[in-house]
Image 1 (cartoon, helix red, strand yellow):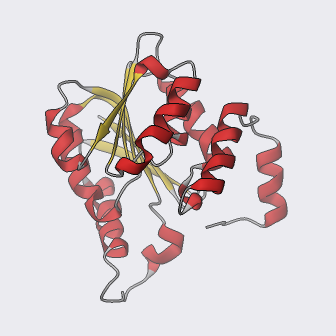
Image 2 (cartoon, helix red, strand yellow):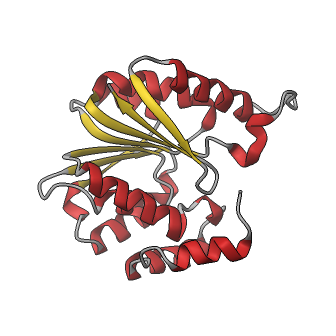
Length: 214
């Protein structure tokens, strides 16, 4: 969802950091070969993720929802030299595609793929994290938060994508089959009211929340 005019949006992108060549290649191949290519973080949001990661300079990163690996590579740009990034996805058909681009990057040996249900995998991760990015099934955002909050180091950051859900979070009535919208409304309320984090919502693309553990 775009909250700004196309001209202003293009101006913002033009005056932000350039998209790395490897990520341009990843984008092209995703659009050529993979279903639902719009799920990519994309140039502008990718640069936002990159600079936020550089500000945090995490030793450990967790990503919930890998897709084709674009956002993982953006987040990896800010990792410490001996840092590690764990990324979880349920789609085994994308595993080799992700690995290809991870290994073409400077961070290949630092990125660990986990295949399966994140609700089952997260409790088994024997580490804590400085930075977490949630971009998976919206119905489970609140459950992911509860699983990761105790694994998040003090001062650590949770980034949550799609929190404005094309503006649907303003809806007061939902279609019976729409489970994502009420789940995101509940999640946004959770982040606002939970005393363990301080939160700000950014109107970037489809909405990006930054929550800091206090």
